[in-house]
Amino acid sequence: MSIFHFDNTYRSLPAETFTECHPTAVSNPQLVAFNDSLAAELGIDTSQSSPSELEAILSGNIQLPHAAYIAQAYAGHQFGHFNRLGDGRAILLGEQLTPDGRRFDLQLKGAGPTPYSRRGDGRATLSSMLREYIISEAMFGLGIPTTRSLAVVATGEAVYREQIQPGAVLTRVAASHLRVGTFQYVAHYGSTQTLEQLVDYSLKRHYPHLIEADNKALALLQAVMEKQIDLIVHWMRVGFIHGVMNTDNVSIAGETIDYGPCAFMNIYKPETVFSSIDTTGRYVFGNQPNIALWNLSRLAESLLSLIHPQTEKAIELATQCIQNTWGQFESKYKQMLIAKIGFTEPTPDALKLSSDLLQWMYAHEADYTNTFVKLMHPQLINDAVYDTTDFTQWLQTWRAQLSSDSQAYKLMKSQNPIYIPRNHQVEKLLTQIGDTGDLKPLHAYLAQLTSPYNAHEPNQLLMQGPPPAHDQNYKTYCGT
Image (cartoon, rainbow, N blue to C red):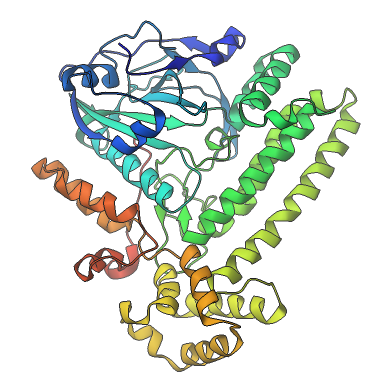
């Protein structure tokens, strides 16, 4: 079949970094969602394939002779505790080469048990895979680096979680599935030679301009840190809470990966967390920058043997790199905050305005997204909280300091989404699909989320509002 144009360079790495593994066949694959625009971008031509053939391929029922079919090995600090992990329910189908020469992993998530499953069933629920499809495409629409979803195929089989649910397989698209945890695994269980090969491979795949660097490991560390800084700033810009920022969920390509217990913050509370497994609040919204730094420090530890042969010197060089590079976060974060209110220069007045607004939102439990929408489109938001004296006073000060309303509006429009995938709306949609099987609401919702910075028809603005009680009892789950 010529649907894909695969290359499988990851298999060139030492065998200890992966295990050959084939999907477990399912009883009744049915294509639930297919991302036509992404398929076109990837150069995937389905015109000569029947729906049943596509369903069979993307469920794992058909074994393609030119595919990779491997589960990748990795480790990770899960809530601060180191574990040996690996792809427990995901199998790499292959590396798709696009018409313009780019390379993307295609991975079947929920394709059955692997040697890394740790007594898991290797399956995924239909609702969790549709949720990843929705959120990942929303993140793409928001302009945030992310893995994406090519397809969801229902399996026709039951999956046992908190309750019995329909099963599904998601085809996930990523720049790669190389993680901080990949380096931790090789550093802990592999050889120095394998670690060197992994660094070389990672540089060639993601940072080819650094392949001739004098200190490749240090160059890789800095590059990954810079990507992660930009990513976390994006998350904070739109109120995204990853929910499970373990080191195995940190992509060295700088993409958002693993949409398990993720959610979007409604009212502005830095301590917001929705994940059912984050009982200590380790991954709350406001702590994400600190956790990112902690995770990147674990990457540095994994690379120490390659940074310098003398451990003390390696630690010194890694620490210096971390301190110098992470210094970019604060300036980029502040630049993001002032851009959200229309300023380009981080003057003391602009910084104070942004800080005062966050403090006001926190004190009044104002919606994070809608507060900035109110500044751009006052007619769209009719919440009484914005009629208060203190907000009016802030608004007068802000307007007096803007140098150009038109320029400020243009900048704000590029930074502040009108629509985010509101948690209650996503859950309502998933319930509706589960009850009726009707996918039309899914496509309508995705169409709106792919253009989140532009106001749509008035009757669609209901999707913009926060839920009653501000998600006080909302919980998200990993789905494993």
